[in-house]
Image (tube, rainbow, N blue to C red):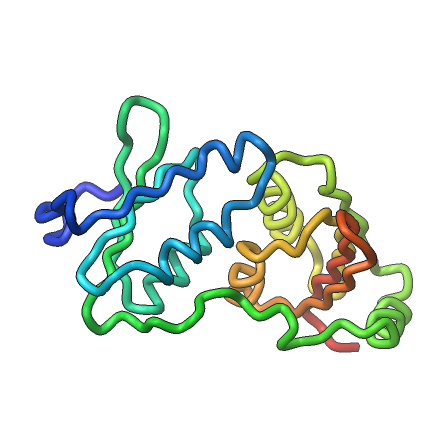
Length: 192
């Protein structure tokens, strides 16, 4: 938890603050990533997005800081977390959505990768977990995974918050969208 208040936070005004509460999205099991990104993309220079949520979106904070946004987190009203993202005049106005198609996942690539790992594959199914447990579970599994083992994840959606975390940790991935609610995510480090 941050203890020193940043200058932008001390100078917040209602006319320059946009509030976005995603707790309902989370309670309904919906990933609020696109809602948050839409709010950020519409934020005028010199304004602040006040994001109210139930967990700390570390990948989002990391991405926005890299894009030049100032951030701060506080607890308000006892239980929820409030994150503020200040759009500096110099902050980039590019799309912040991670492009999962930058590394297209073709069936042949997936089959070849699975074959190359042989029996060194760990399977994980996070389809029935509520947000943010799929991401937490995957990252926890990766902490104990040997470098020569591939993690084969059954997911219900493309985990956009997770991808920057994987990249930061040096992982590669392939994604195969079988059908709605059925995503195959292969996470690995070594190219064999």
